[in-house]
Length: 368
Image (cartoon, rainbow, N blue to C red; front, side):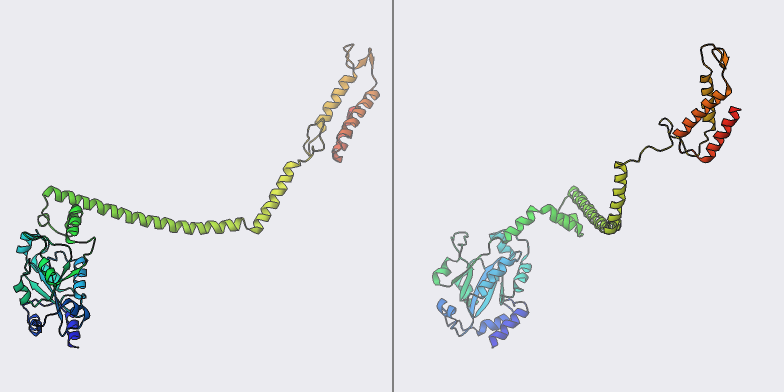
C-alpha cells in the first residue's frame, strides 16, 4: 500500500534529484545487503523495490527517450527507476555539442512519468563506488555495444556480472535525426523565427540573409492571402451558380412542362402542315394576274372598248371608220363591243354588282 502511494505521488510531481531529502530517505530505507538476482527480480519475489539505473544525454528529449525509460521502469514488477544525466562539460568532451544545456536536459527527464529519481553530473562509465553509493541493482540500456576511448563496450563489465538488462531502441527517431531535420530545413526555421520576432543577431544570420528571408516571408504571406481570397471567390461563384441553376430549372419547367410542350407541339404541327400544303391560286385573276379586291374596273373596260373599236375599223384603206371604203354601221360596232364586254365579264365572275351596273351604263353611253 505504501509503495502504491509513493508511486502515485511520483506521477503527480517531478522526480526528485538524488540530493533531495525524498531521494535520500528512499535510498536509506533500501537494504542493499540483500542482493537481488535477475531471477528474483523477474519473479517479483523481493522484499524491497528493485533499483534500476539508466543513463544518457537526453538532448532534445523525444519519444525514443521516453520509450526507453518506460521499458526500464517496467522491466521488473516493482522497480524504482534512477536516471543519470551527464553534464555539459563531460558531454561536449565525449560526444559533442548539445542543443539543450544541462539544466534543460535535467528538467526534461525529471518530468517524465516513469522516472523516480534524477542523478545530476552522471559519470560516463559506472564505477563500483558509484554503483554502491546509489545502491544500484541493475543497469538498463540498449544491447548495442557502446564504444569509448580504450573500451569496446562500457557496459561489458556489468554484463559479465549479471547486472545489465537490455532495452530496445526506437527506430527512426534520435537526437541526431532531429538535428539533421533542422539543418536540412534551416532556411525555413530561420524565416519562421524571424516572422515570430527574433532578430538576425539572435539567429546568427547576416544582414543580406535577413533581408532575403524577410522578402520570402512577405511573398509567402501574399501568396497565402491570394489563395484565401481566391477560395472565397470560388465559394461565391459556386453559391451564385447554384442559385441561378435553380432559377434556370424552374424557368425551363415553366416553359417546357407537360402542358406547354403539348401546346407547342400542336402549334408546330399546324405550321408544318400549312408549309407542306400551300393554298391554291387566288380567284378573280385575269390571264393569271391577281386583281386586288375593290379595284375599279372602269378604266380597264374603257381601254378594252377603245382597242376593240380600233380593231373593228380595219387597217387596209387607212380609214379607221370604214370597211372597203364604206362606213360600218354603229349597230354592228355596238354588238361587237357588247360581245367583247360579255366575254370579259365571263372571265371575271368575282366582279361585284355595282361594277356590273357601271359597265352597263358605260356600254350604253358608248353605243349611243
